[in-house]
Image 1: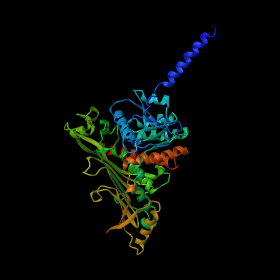
Image 2: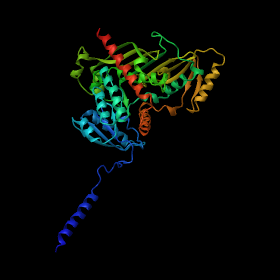
Image 3: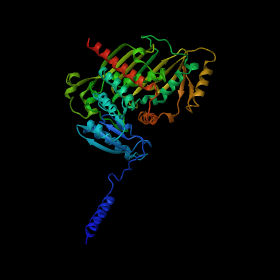
Length: 468
């Protein structure tokens, strides 16, 4: 009789264990968490489609479970819809398992739980720098979409965040997709081939050695669908002015192309000569087509004229010198691209032997195209160009030259033209390598700081000019 209570409780324990083991696993249609993965992603308030593009591919080093913290709403749903689209596509589907927390205290909740070790930030830029500071202060790594700072006060906060990241041994890195575009890569390679390029031309403010420009469009397609933009995207206080937003890509390319693997000291190496900003008009009908909103919100009313036209802060220009090299940089936004085209990029590097020019106009069928424009008249110059490109083809098999009236068109095989969305995976691969090594290249941090100094200082100058 004394053994009956023991047998009774033993029997209950067997039932409990059986019930627990027989329960169906949550999300059983998804692959299990990869506990051996090095990286566990956290997505924080994904208000921009770039947050999803980071997950358009799978990576062996990244756990398939991603922790999402956001206040909820349409932007979060748009993000989750893109992830779902990638998971369900026919060709090479992903298998992300999104664990979502929605509440107004999402940031504090994420910082307290620390369920991952790399935080992806892509959304409203008004508080992004503050979030970056809190994340690195908590000992978490950051992969941040551009821009990481949209004004001078943000810049001071970001500079301090880099110091905190170094102290805490975490990586703070921004997503610079344009470094992965093949024409930019080859332009950089040829700019450092003296037989082809010579040396960089001296240039002046009125005749700069570097001219770089991008044109973006509000109405565009992402992953095959028309992009819906949040209404705050049109607010310079939340998205940022053009030169402080997409202008960061251009500033980065200039630094990366002209002075690769070189630490830039913004206090000595950068001088802003002039800067200006101007608006792009967007009608209420155009605004509605992009945002699905039927009226301009109150925070945009200061920029609305005649009740129906929004004067969007969408264009900017900077004239500056980088280590003495005169640069003219222009970032512009229009409403919709010409049929068959999209965002465009232009870059001219002036050398003593040749100019290297990337065009993306109608003549190029709106595809980035690299030209070598001959300036040298030496009898053996053509052979030098041919030899240089042949040597370069050992690194990039298949590239060749086609003679034209001005010099040569660089022929690039289609296999290298992967497109903007694929560049996010290439950035992630670089970041994962840095994560594995537990450090960024020595020049990356000072060059990121220099980049954001250039954009925010130029905006400060342009804003004062606009108000005078």
